[in-house]
Image 1 (cartoon, helix red, strand yellow):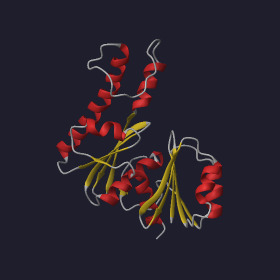
Image 2 (cartoon, helix red, strand yellow):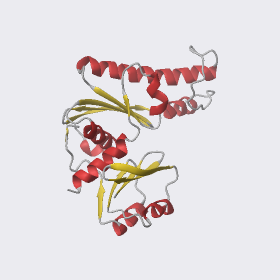
Image 3 (spheres, one colour):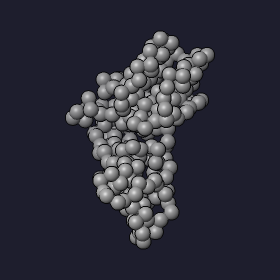
Length: 240
């Protein structure tokens, strides 16, 4: 069995895969030693992969390398079935690499736009077996926080579908501005890519993916596990 450790900006995901299928998973806001130890106890895990977009807690390495025969730490140097053409691969987030790998494993050889809406919104383009690159934009919560932090009177809000459009009060003006702005942005990205690549597959994922997916006017595949699926795929690919 495989253990996936996906450490993001705001939370950590742990998942166990057997024969390519996820059999368990959990999302943790405060990742501590005991949480990982609990997953490892009596689990029969033989391989693990670590992906982190921030500093990885030392206990993760200690526990995994001590208790698991094969551990892979994802980086741009990992063996991948596609070529990375990003000019600065050493700065490429492991979550973006994993999302592209998950997309590749699902739609092998096709042109794919992966939209991951989390702390940031990333747009990554896979052209057959070439990862061309992508863009990074502030996520929904980051936009709310920016409006609150860099103004004197605007309140800090959380995402909601309950607002007037156009906004008829300050709360609705912020909600409509952020939510509709993100929606327009994503729809326009998809339209632009489809103009150049009519057969392109579009994948939506990330913490805000379920909130945004029904607001899009283009056909998309909502695949919330594409990143951890990709991590399992990379683990299998490197463990051969």
